[in-house]
Each structure stands twice: as structure tokens, then as C-alpha cells.
Length: 292
Image 1 (cartoon, rainbow, N blue to C red):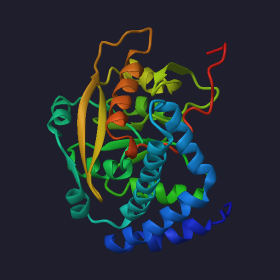
Image 2 (image 1 turned 135 degrees about the vertical axis):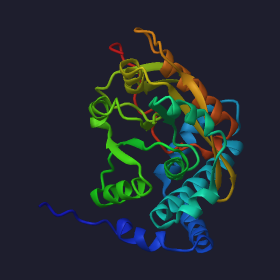
Image 3 (image 1 turned 120 degrees about the vertical axis):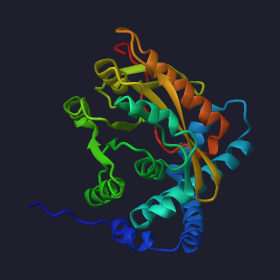
């Protein structure tokens, strides 16, 4: 069996995860300061993405927003490392599902659903709360991390409360294999598609933007309802989750209506609370070509 070298950060994660919340947040603040002021590449990506998305805002406003965003990103990472060591009571206390009855109506009809979320607030805690507070199991589609040790820790954390992680390259096959079993298939769909993947292009945050159409294809094949899952920060370490039906069968055979609806819902959520989206994600790293 191949041995995987453990990074310095992955060695620290069990220690960080076991810290009490007050100490965890106390530690997060200097990490934010060092990261923001000395990791220039990451800071520049955040600022550049914001400047292109909000051309009407001044540089002074954007720098303040970028600082707040980076701070919340660091705090979210620290919270996520804590997931593996949190009790069910802690999860339920910190994340509230506002309208789970919307999803339970589908469950009562033995109807599986597709749950579309985003890198907004704390998507790791969102999965944990949904796994605990909903009556049906969740399969979480994920993109593997380059750090093998961190990737295994992430899978362990995400499956702790009953969720079943599925690697994105296997998503369609696994979903079709389990199409007769009641599940919620959770996907975070706001990342930039890979180069060879089929894309849908639309105007998003004032920019020509591409979205993966994998969810659209899965919905058309399975006829599952598509649910938009939004998250809002209430206070430090406390969030609420809201569900909304994005689309239902019958779906059009042509076009990308589901993907466009997702782009609009995501855009509105970001505009309401731009400080909580992962602006460090290089969503606009590729431009449209004549072949798209």
C-alpha cells in the first residue's frame, strides 16, 4: 500500500478540532491576520473577484469587504475542523433548519431529491445538521482534496452523522444505482467546471461565468426535484438553513433552465451577504472560447 506523506497542517487538525470553541476562535484571529496580510496571492484573488463583481464599489469598500470575508473564511475552516469532534447536541444547537417540512413532504412520498448548496457560510456544518435533523440519509458529492490525509479526514468528518460521501467522478453512476432508494443527493455547485466538462455560460455577478451542467443532467435522468439550500449566519458559530424548491419534473429535454435558476438564486444569496461566500474560489479562471 502506498504511503502518503502527512502535511504539517493535517498533523495539526486533530489538535485544533479538540479545542473548546472560545479557544478555537481566539486562535483563529491571529491566523486570519497573518494570512490576510502575508498571503498576498489569496488576498489578491479575493479582491480581484470582488472588484469585477462589484464595479460600482470603491476600493476602500472592497478592501474592507475582502478583510471581513477572509476573516470569516478562516473562522469557517476552524469550525469545520471541529466537526469531527462535535456532539450531536452541539450541531443541533448551532445549526437550525428553518423549514425541514418542505423536504419531509417529498420523503413521505418516497421521493428522493437533489439538494444544491454553495460555498456560503459553513457548508460542512450544513451537511452535518441535515444528516442529523432530516429523516432520510444524504449522499454528499465531493471533489477530492489534493492532500490525501486531509481528504480522508474530510470524508470521515462528513460521514460521521450518517452521510455517504461520493466522489464527483462517480456521482452519476452511484445516483443511478441507488435511484430506487430514498436519498437526498447533496451537491455544492458553485465551483468552476473543469476544462473538458460541458458548461453553461451566463452572466453572474456582472461577469461571463460558467457552471457545471452535471446536476441538470442528473435531474433530467432521474426526474428528482431540485432543492436550493441556502445558509445564513446568525452570529459567531451559529447558522440557519432554508430550503426552496428550485425545479421539478417534467424537465425540458433541451436547454439549461435548472442551471440558470441555480445561478440566479446563488447570486441573490451572495448579494445579500457577500462577506460569507468563498471569494477565494477562482471561479473565473477560465474564459469562454469559440467552442463553448
